[in-house]
Length: 230
Image: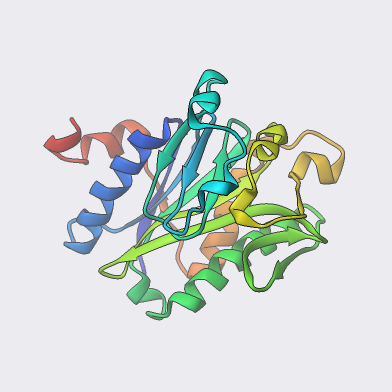
């Protein structure tokens, strides 16, 4: 039986959360801790993946910063994506070797967890090959980007709940032209926040990954990170 924890971090800036992920991934790889799934909201930020193309930023980086939007390079796959309050971001720091040691399957499993969660809200999510992520008809509702090192996963899922989607118009999201982004709130015509979506996504991940993680408070997790982040 796979064991692990989940933790709601609340609001945390992207760079700090990325640092936490790296330390946790090292701990999981060294068998110092069990798998942990992080749930978080980020202040407005554009993240640039390993396959980033500069033309997918529609403004200069300085122009973004003047609007209060950070621009952060990262090592996940994919191109540019956005995070902002009202978007539920999920980072499964998980040993993928225990999930079949198959990266294609791992990506499909992450997509499946979102599809299951959308179904719980009465929405029909779908895959849209060859693009990674989850869509409602031709509108993207969840972006997925990962980095797996020593079979430990970093990065994960960004599910739009009730966030401001105007930020997506300042980029070419994930480098895909001609398609809109959407959110749970927009699709359902009622307010669905991050805290509404969190237990639904957690249950879906538990079902897909085959384990029931225990809750870990942010303060408890921080105390376990080690001296490099104290």
